[in-house]
Length: 149
Image (tube, rainbow, N blue to C red; front, side, top):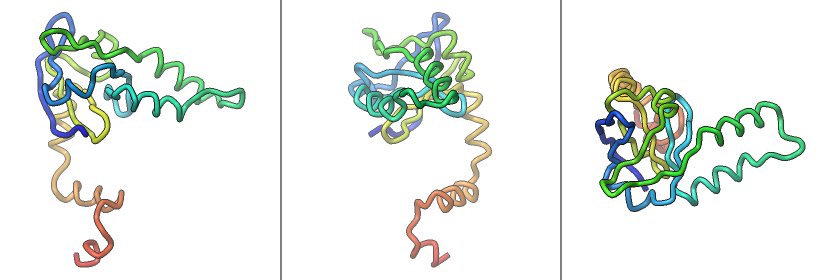
């Protein structure tokens, strides 16, 4: 289970420290482009399950083939060096709008990576009322709790 957000500097070679809390569970993981200009790191088992959902068949649509092509073209193994850093390719940094700082966000079963400016703008826009409304829309609160309000 991954949670929390962590900010780290990216060196000129594209190396960035992986948060210590995540390192043990991300050996053998895969980093790939994700939704909303984020990179997503999936542990090995999670990647296999995710990939199973998108296996190509003779009946696969053109959209599915295009998605799979670009997902796999952008996927890379997560290699953690002796200093606990991973390498973000220039393509990954461009995709996630990462300049000199990256934000790692634990999101349950995956870790997202995004540029610090993008993350800061998103956090600034997400006030308590919007957060509550989003929770209500996706059903995070029980019906009884929602009815009391």
